Image 1 (spheres, helix red, strand yellow):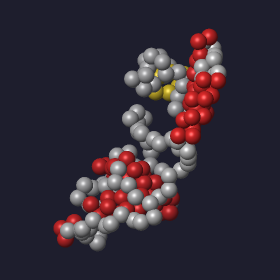
Image 2 (spheres, one colour):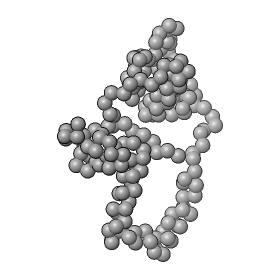
Image 3 (cartoon, one colour):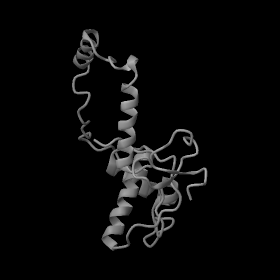
Length: 177
């Protein structure tokens, strides 16, 4: 297993993992949270070990610059509040209504990472409902909420987590708050 060029032993957990082909020349840690923290710590140590970086962002000129920026941007770190008035519901045409017995999930036995794979494209009511629920019309936000709703539904029904196949390299995640 270790002899394949797409597998490498993680420097953190010492287990073999599949290397992202785009980063194969410098990926030495797997994607487990503890290993990602170890990778970040090693990267920081390597960066700080260079003499040119030891005094980076130190000194009075940088202190003043940061203080001025903070005065100009008060509350930049605070969580944005949800708008109090909900967005006006769009007009729903008669041909857009969902039939009562119709299934909205494309593959009920599988979990997907894209909105197109989770919901059928001819169900704008479902997409609109999630959009109104989240207060966002961005496809990424709707897909994320859909995955959470699917996971909660699976928990309630006792279906468990579907088996994962290959690692997803292009998944986008938001930073945790």
